[in-house]
Length: 84
Image (cartoon, rainbow, N blue to C red; front, side):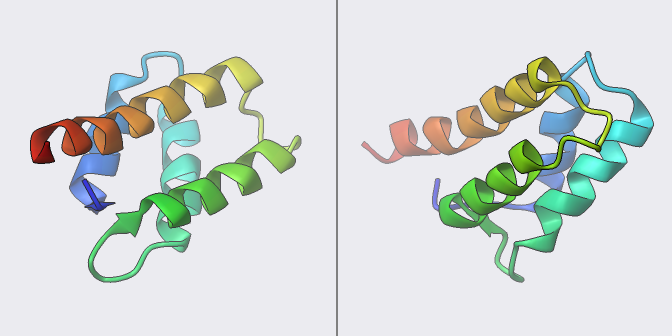
């Protein structure tokens, strides 16, 4: 998958049971900050992820962030499998 849209990001974040609604909204804000109207490319995702990893004052543990990363990466990976 080249890009994921806002709906996909919402669903992926809901699948991460370790984060609370406030953390989910924060993550969504950071992730959607780096998207364009066609969705969020893998490059934009990586940029957002770097920002989240560098921000140690966001009340999101590295474990929680790793789970979010895995869930979102699976969206890109599943799209790659569909195209081959």
